[in-house]
Image (cartoon, rainbow, N blue to C red; front, side, top):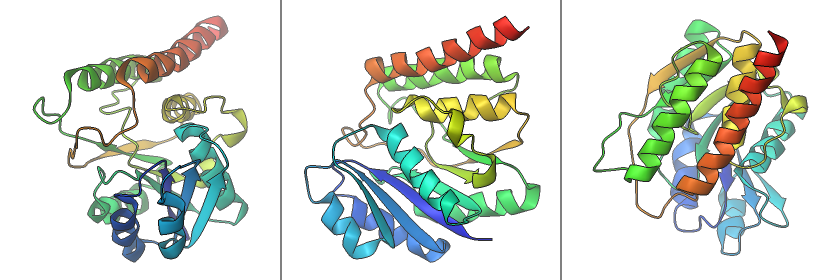
Length: 225
């Protein structure tokens, strides 16, 4: 099985080195998509990663994931583990994702974080709980942590051609479309590591964008029924 790590990065110069170094022992290739960073992210990644793909301007996390997933699909990779560049996803968990994938033959493995109010700002926690609730309704099954970007994708199961979101809503859109297609989705527990200011997720703006993706899916499902 050809497996890769895919890291979408934007202005992550302080953390990208440790993330890349931590992931390399677990996969065949580490790919970084530099999403128009204005700091040293691209140069640091170029010295460590196997491949760096670059956006000339900041296009959003979703666009970065599409760029990286498409590149890996074109080169015949079987699976991609995605994790954030801000060091909030411990690379030591990667073998657990791979083991779950190999044991079950599933299409997607999602990390689920044990939530603690003292570690995550209230608005961020509320946004996650609400989106997970509505995505669970839309999917017809319990989704514990719909916003966790620490995932393993079976690349042949990712509906790249039909994805529309380009920001943080893309991960929700992939999940919704895979549920609709009857793909098998598994979950593993991963630690909650939260450093204030580390994430580029904006609790209100990006939550509204995620909500729009969910609403579009629910409306389309109702029209078909």
